[in-house]
Length: 336
Image (cartoon, rainbow, N blue to C red; front, side):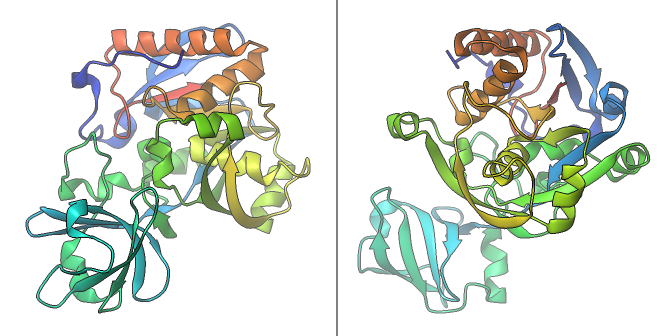
């Protein structure tokens, strides 16, 4: 239901230049029409008095590469000043109780191994030791070749607090100039959700049966909550922003501000409380992100899951036929 064939040539390996010159597919909920445009013209399609909400989380340099890339420590969590949780490669090198020599001065003791293979590593130096900078890299997705020259391109222009393991990619299309123009006409708000690796994960039977996904930390300030409560039309930039807004408003039908962890699974049948329109990229098949967008179309147009999924695939087929670029550095879609 959530599957499609994408030619490899349409998987973007680098962003549009300038980044706001990416293509923009505009899908209108009112009649199902599709318009092809470019991102820097997005203001032409936004209703008056729109409030645009973005995720301002910044991607951490959490991919540590040693021995010319043959050994990898992908840091998913920092537990204390010397203890981390990480995915590792090659796994056979990081067995329980072993002390792995990563450099002349850096050792990692394997203190524990989770059921999913994530290691708890105790370092012999602080994990913010400046010497580590030479080994730290931006964590580009697996379908993009590692290229450190793209590090700044894999951050939004409004990124602030470090904490994400992947970029909130729908926001990569904004430039400072475009934002300046938008802010003259529309309200612009920031929330924070630190993106975890689960954003790329395939759905499992456990997800479907428990109706829960991976957990991610989010923050919404009291001031932002007050502005959202008076907003007339909310455009969420990216699925992570949607997840934040819907989680923050799920307990009461108002925003109060605060922080916490969310494992919300937005799928067809979900009733949206916070979001009126969405800016998003084109997602991998079979993922929760694709289901979230189908859920939005289903809820706003009163469609069944089957019909909403078919409509989403129709949109994606149009994008493929018209050579839109897909995934993290790809083009954008506005659902309004």
